[in-house]
Image (cartoon, rainbow, N blue to C red; front, side):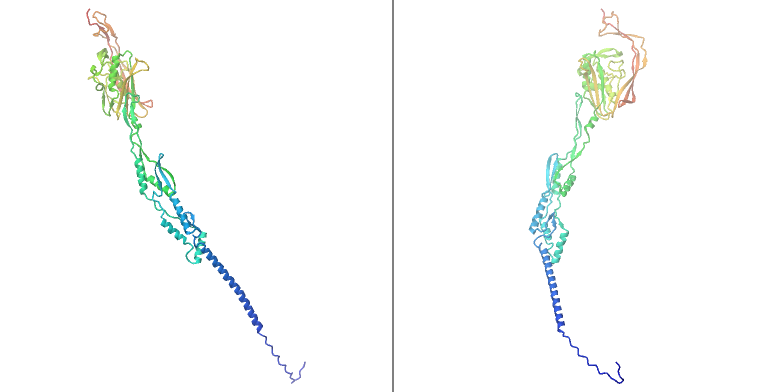
Length: 508
């Protein structure tokens, strides 16, 4: 459209006034919305309140569940008190305390005998009832003090980790136990007794009656006490066998026996031609030697012990060797066989020979050089006790086997052991030297008229000439039967003998 110059279009009609919108619907909507929000909020608040009430109620129930009982998992002396009333808990614990108090007993025994029965009461071990009540009272308060939350937290903690407690017993006292052990010790303590030689009986095959040793007894009460206390602490009941210590004696039977060992048994045979008087003289001499004891360092004298050979001393007339080796009748004939047997025993017992003399001629009962002749107040047999202990001697004439007229001399010497496996024996080197017989002849009067009576009778050839000789005797030491050394003892000369004739003394 074109407009002409100076043309002005008609003015636009004024705009129609806008109609105002009503605010009531908005407000209503807002009111409705607010009401709805309030309604929802109320529901939530109510729900929260309900939930809070429920939680509170649960809390109250959880806490008040143990209001009249012990909280859970409270354990005393192994008894779970959870849920128990105070009185139930007290009864349960005291019952356990009583059971424990009576649960232990120990018998002190010895070889089937019961000395005493120990209990906790006798050892002074007791549980103080007041302390038990105090402990239970403190435990009963668990879960009952503080806010509900604090109380609940304490209960929950007990559910997770139990509370364990124990009642305590008093310490053991020593007074009664020491007294009991002291009395037992008095009954089980005694000193040892040494073995000793009670009797020396030379008439017995074993001449020594030895009283054996007895061991002593000693009780270590401290050791027993510690055993008792250890068993009491562990609650170990039963029997405790008391074993006292053995106390050894200083001298045993073996010790005594070692001092009375058979050192040597010497035997010499008695000739069957030996007269009863001669045998009686040997028995008389032996009767004074049998049972003889010789103290250490003392010297034995055959003549002193057997006494002078007189009829008053019990000796009888019998054949003996006289001067020049001739047989003659003398009081005490045959005693030299007794002295020879003693000599052999003493020498082979390794005792020191102080005095000894050989016969002038050979004898029938031993090797020349192993004999010992005696003449009262002139020739003696002596030996010294160098053994270090007492020497005991037995001497007797014994029958040989079952024969009634065959005898032997037996001398035994006892004393301290020579050593394990040690013994002695004699060795005689015979006729190490020969001495020619003299060519002379002797005539001797037969005063007893045994062979020749009258002077005009033919002389009787009593003995032919005989060479003399020298024997050497040695003492051998043997160990387990083997010779380990040899000691020279004597060199003895058997003198040569001339021819001897006996002549009569009476005229017809």
